[in-house]
Length: 360
Ligand code: KG4
Ligand code: ZN
Image 1 (cartoon, protein in one colour):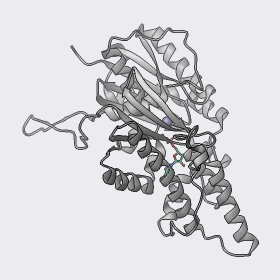
Image 2: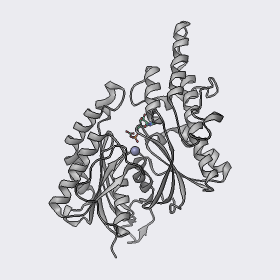
Image 3: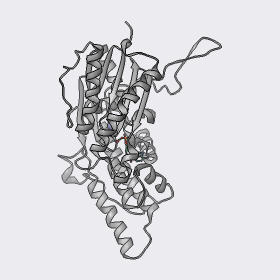
Image 4: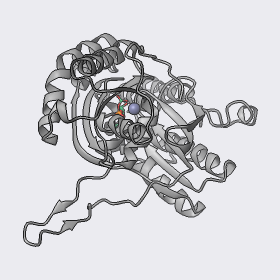
């Protein structure tokens, strides 16, 4: 049977994403970001994001259909992020998806955003057909199949979660998550403390390159013995942020120049260390020698580097999808939608609501 052609809509944070897949084949992935509009506030402003989604959703949808070269009529289903995320932002995508489903009579599937990040890893670019030989050429970034079970570490500006995925549709378990700021948020806030522009992640990454990661020993949140029971796989970045603030203030009080590169490198090291340590602890505890990374913070050079080093040492197979599929996007939602259709699952009722705290 033909693989399902599915359109996916993602509006849980500041990216308006529309993607189109045929089964596991990625046909289109168009993203409009309202990041620039949030820059002067130093973080995502929910109302600004929701209004930006309203303006971007229709052009993004048309661009995706154009890119994939398909019409709405040809779709087998429509998928949309139902949560977790910003309520007002989610509602824009869900409203658009319901409108499309009603107008076209196509089935509608609500998809969990975090499961979407895992589903991103299934996607492959279409095989190119060599003009001269008429032969299909294997996709250049073929990472082989995603094997399950896997531990998934999802880190972005909106979430920091550790999952145990036994089955993409039926068995995803939340092992832990941040109890305060998301990791990306911590990067953005620390960048601000250092006088670096938003978004802070790439700025800190750049500044850290010339710094000493051992210059300052910043705290690794929730790693004390007392946290081993209840918060074994949870994260906390607020204490780290406060520690950076104190370091910066102390330097200013002394009339010293703030050692930006050393602070950036030491902060980045603390985040990378705690993320990868807990992810590999989860692999060990659950006997799962596989780790999948997702979310925009995966762009971080040290997080990637440390993950590669420690996974190799621990005999854990590491998977990192291409960055365009790690950051929030519609194709990852379409990918899960295609799995639901292929598994013969019933569509969501047309009156389902946005759930900003939707569990996996
Ligand atoms: O997944 P994403 O694009 O979407 C949202 O969560 O909105 O993630 C954006 C977050 C921002 O907080 C940004 O500062 C962070 O990812 N980020 C990084 C890097 N690039 C982006 N954090 C650390 N290092 C980076 N290189
Ligand atoms: Zn995300």
